[in-house]
Image (tube, rainbow, N blue to C red; front, top):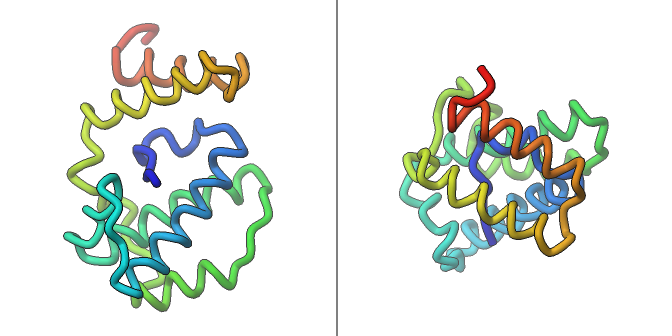
Length: 138
């Protein structure tokens, strides 16, 4: 279980973006039941639910941008759970800092190295990271 750094959502390959949506649904269900104990994502419970809601909105917005279908009933379940239909979009987890962005980048690079991510998909991720994080190519 992992929430990718929010800045990488627009660059995730389609399958990974859809998987991230499933992760959001699973996190909501486990959080609601009080069984969310996964070390990589349990930090979400330390924050107001609007943080999670904003992350979910980032994911479904990107899915909408790519015309990827999803069942909206799960989105509304998350909205009900978070008691919100969205926020400013500026609320992000402090864990989603530059260090975590770099960790996610290298995790994605490993997926590329192992053939899970295509050359084209990796290029989008790498170009973003090189330009925006490393400051090259500006």
